[in-house]
Length: 116
Image 1 (cartoon, rainbow, N blue to C red):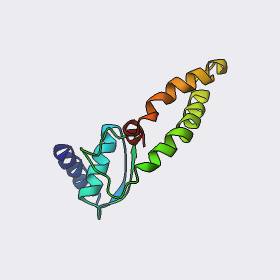
Image 2: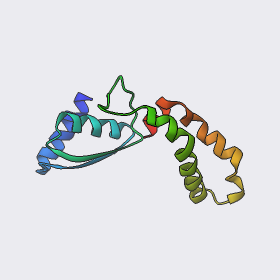
Image 3: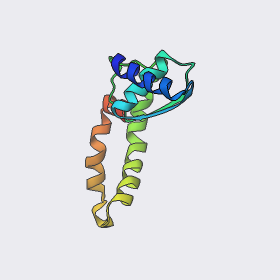
Image 4: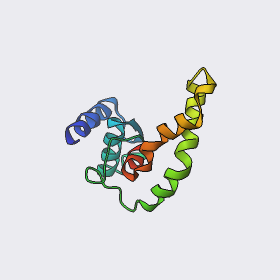
C-alpha cells in the first residue's frame, strides 16, 4: 500500500492537486482509504466501493461491526434485486431463488465489511 500511495501522491503532485475527493473501487478503494488515513488534510472526503480490505489490513476506527448483522438481513437483497433487474433482460430470471444465492455471501459479516 505504501508504494501505491507514493505513486498516487506523485501523480497528484505533478498535476498540482493539493487537495481533492477520492473515489476508489476494490484495490483502488483500499488505496483511497489508506491515502485518506495517512493524509486526512489533503483528501476532503473518501468513497471506497467494495474495498478489498479486512480489519487486519486497514482497521476502521469507531466502526460499529454489530450494524453489519442488521444490514445483512435487509439491504443487500434489495440492492441485489435492483441491480439484477437493471442488468438482466429476462426479468423472470430475477426470482427469489436467484436473490437468495446472490445474497448468501453477505450473511458473513467480513464479506459484508468488504462490500461496504
